[in-house]
Length: 295
Image 1 (cartoon, one colour):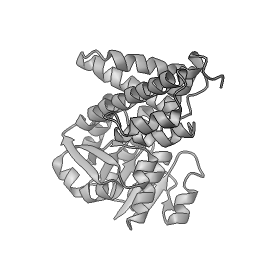
Image 2 (cartoon, one colour):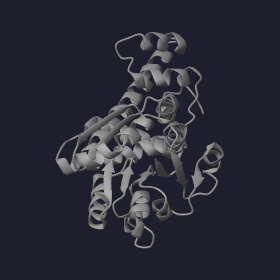
Image 3 (spheres, one colour):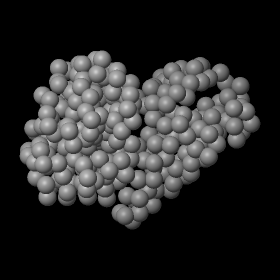
């Protein structure tokens, strides 16, 4: 299949790699030039604009940083993907984490333009993508899902049709608030233990063998042992996702008190220069506050 991937951040690049390796013809585009070079060397071809994707591809995947970026790429009056003459009858799959409001706007515009649209946000980081363990949560028309299900399984094996409309968006936000909350509790676990001279390697060995050893916790043990906060998903982006979760909660009349606290803690990470580090920098923030580290 000829498919295009628009947005070559860490996740978009990993998704494009999976598709190239699966034997698809893959067009790639990123707002900032240079991000496509490694993928072109791997066998992809570079696009000059998002709308150009439709000239060769029947399916386009967007993996963009936020709601504004999706709106710009999909809905802009001068070059938005859903307005391209060659887009009619083709399929747009958005895998970004964006607001329900923007997703609905893209869905409505796509329907008016005759473009098939599927929400398909994901759960996992670039390492999970490359290891072939990504979870894809899709929602939209079942016929659209069926037509691209095999393509989605080439990206990740755990593929779910969650329902119609924007159901997948809500599920993705619900998952990410659990990820952020788990990260904060793991940070508190480590900070407490180290305050009482418990060695980190022994603590994490026990945590990894305990009832709280979720896949997420296990993914974080190696970097925590190395005190490595290289970003797989930044504190800034996690804060953005919790903002979206709190917006959705307000629209649904649901209080999310713990999520609100973790959102403030991630904001504190951003305010103290930790925003582009991995969201496990929650531990760095906590240890600074406790006087356990100075940097």
